[in-house]
Amino acid sequence: MTDQLTNLEGLVCPVPLPHNQRIVLGHGSGGRMSYNLISKVFASSFDNPILRTGDDSGVVVIPNDNAAQGSKIAISTDSHVVMPLFFPGGDIGRLAVCGTVNDVAMMGARPLYLTAGFILEEGLDVEVLKKVVESMRLAALESNVQIIAGDTKVVQNGKADGLYINTTGIGIIPATLNISGCNAQPGDVVILSGSIGDHGIAVLAARGELKFETQITSDVAPLNGLVSSMLDITSEIHVLRDPTRGGLATTLNEIALQSRVGIRIYEDTIPVKPAVAAACEMLGFDPLYVANEGKLIAVVKKNAAEEVLAAMKNHPLAAQAAIIGTITENTGDHVTLKTNFGTTRMIDMLSGEMLPRIC
Image (cartoon, rainbow, N blue to C red):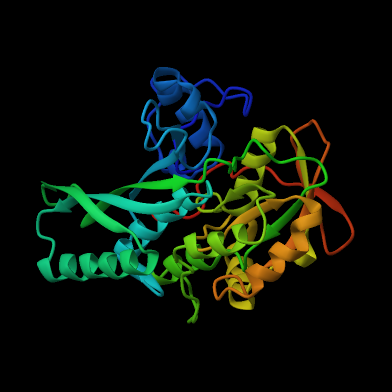
């Protein structure tokens, strides 16, 4: 939902935007400031039942077509403004393809097609553009999708960070499948596919903002193959979400608010690579809020959780998958963390801007 417009009715009590307020980086963080902006500026104008669900993709049913009646499609769009354009483990082109493929896949859909729009800054080296486009081609092959349409615009020097990309994705959802952030139920199990914070710290390192050398690489990857392997095991997957901007903490809050449930997670079960933990400790960051681009959260019916976890661990993108928590009946829409010290603390949405230009 951090990547989609959503009507926040029933999800968040948005704070009214002050008169004459200007946009700041925090409005793009995917956290509470983003919610308030979306609710007050966008959702109030674009409100409709599809948008109101608040998922990573809009899901529509194809009407009045005998050949495809009842078929559902997922549609998602995303803009990519990462700086620098190239970072350990990826680049803006791979990010653009994988990010949109993943948003479509989080609805249980099979991604099929993408469109790509390019905003190019005057002075951009054509060889850089070729490298980004080649990366997109390879990522599309890996994701088994086709880029079928696009657009290109050029802006004056100094009006962009070299290159921005917008991608829109379309995928097919089986008619009997219903995955949504609204579907979490008390007793469900929360599974995380792997270590958190890799992407955000990798981008930070690429900008030269870490004071020590690190081998951290971004986790950016297409997750549709992983999702397919999970759905081969069971249809009892209630929610899928990739925790991008705002990190794991913000995404769990979104699910709790959408489903009107509580979520309890356990610190000692959440995988964090030592290098990521060290960087976060040095910089005063909480890994729970650092961005990811190749991880997913699955909320699964309890009796299917162990089978789903086993299938995930057999996939190369989820070898570190772990059960990290449970869904509770807490109607206060809270996310709580049981710490390694045995205490419990509230986990809220990201309240400001932690890592600008990370996706």
